[in-house]
Image (cartoon, rainbow over all chains, first blue to last red; front, side, top):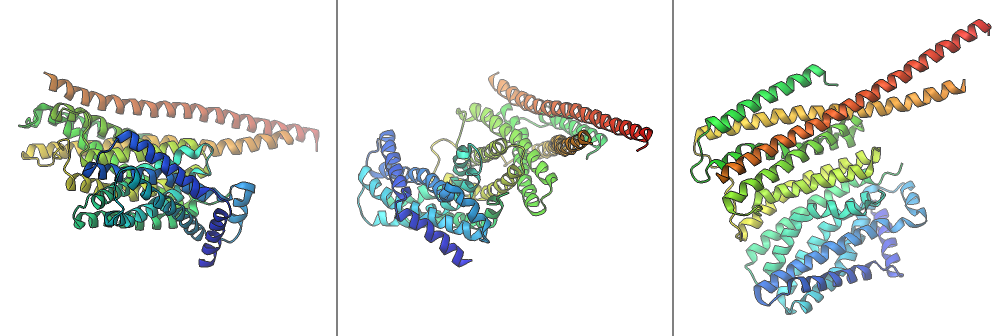
Length: 225
Length: 236
Length: 62
């Protein structure tokens, strides 16, 4: 099972490195979202600026995450490769893990870019507070990737299913979104680490539940008739 | 599946309990000191929320059985629960809003309970849209089951995170205190009767919807075998 | 009294929505029963045709 996981993941990453445009697309989308939000909120400095920055970062995460998951899941949609993949004796759970990992890696790269852009656009400093953001963002990206990979499996199999992914992913992601934004805002605003720890725990719980759920349920999604 | 008699019986029980609940809400229970008569909305608002959450759990349980056993009856039950739950969830939000306006002066407050119910409503909506898009297919039933299960897993963590959100960060708008601190035992009794009435009503409506879905499933199977028989008859 | 209007509105909406949904289910039921009757008619037609075919073959002696 581990070998099929690495095989699929390696294939997806190779595709990306050899000229796939997913990470570029995700990065570009994050940039655009951040620009829009700067105009929308016109943030000042201080705590209000930190909260706006945290919020903007997570909006960018959600939007780029949806794109990333869709891309990771539909990597084989051209030339009917998906049928070949599913006809092979490939463990569906391994397939899910590989897609999840691919989506997560795409998102993590985009998030790194987003954090840098956020510091620039919202007039913050590249200091220890920004470093505290990293675990929250990584946990959030993992949770969203887990959720969106499963849902993208559904939306990619439905005609006109592009609406389904955001429609379901956004409300389901709300707990992690709340936790992530609050953790990020407290990290950037220099709030006590006890508050930060609580929100991180919520993120961890979210990740555990959704990775497990996706792992168990993906086989019911990726069943080709 | 359910005999006409059972459905009629359930309907009568629900109706009787509802009448009892209405009597208690409008005649028996005393007016609450702070909020006045508008507080009486509470006695029907809370049971609607109870039904909405129970129905959501039912969608998930039906989904688990459907994925495990593959029998269409479970999907029919899940869909009936989703549609019924959506109706009651909408009522929670609408009555909550109507209650909030005279008390807090705003049509919507982001307090923890209303926010959680809003998320629930969005999840219900997503499920129903998914089913509409997937149509009357096995794939639709399977996807619905998966989404129902995942959404139900999500709900507890939504409740926790929204509550934390509202307590760690004090609300800008005044939050509704929740209204479960009922002083008068008559209020408790009224709430319990209303809960019973809405539970009976929910079961009745769920049965009605479930029966139509079962009929639809059976008619589909019947239509297919009829078409085959008619084609065979033409050949002979 | 304005608060009375709010109370009335809330309860009126509850009953309107529930009544509306039950009505929706009832109409579905009626349509499905009509479909069922149409199918039963088709089945009877099939049975009669089968019987007629069998009788014709019997008379023809094959």
